[in-house]
Length: 201
Image (cartoon, rainbow, N blue to C red; front, side, top):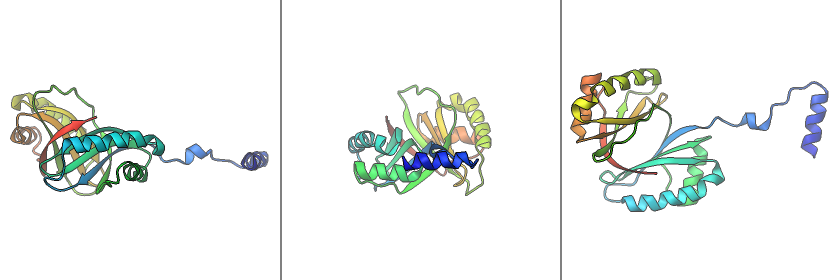
């Protein structure tokens, strides 16, 4: 009641009042990364941890969308929608205690349908902080799509962190070399690393 009275009083004197919801940060996409070490990750264990995230996410206004596991490297990549990185950390902490080593705020490209039956890869392009724009990546992605069939590749989506200068591409391919050759012929921008992953939802 005190807050309502104060707002009414301020409005009565012609003072502009900003609604509380307008002060919240805008919801956006994030990819958070867990580096757990080679040989220390199984897909089954990550699936169990993810189930705990899903049971906890509503408390912190986070929505986990997909995740990818590289068992060889021991890395887990989680795609989520949230208002800020702190909410993602709080969700993981409350769910299972496995905190991310890195969190990228990202924008996504236009997704395509996975065909299935091929290996799934995440590749990482590192251009340096501030050295990449989402619009330029969109143009390069169009060139990838024009070449991909030649090498049996199917680009599913990509994500861009302009501030960090990082681009992540998700694609189906016969092998990592086919993915690299597609990028090379399409625009010449080669990934720093290519990881074979398994996806969960």
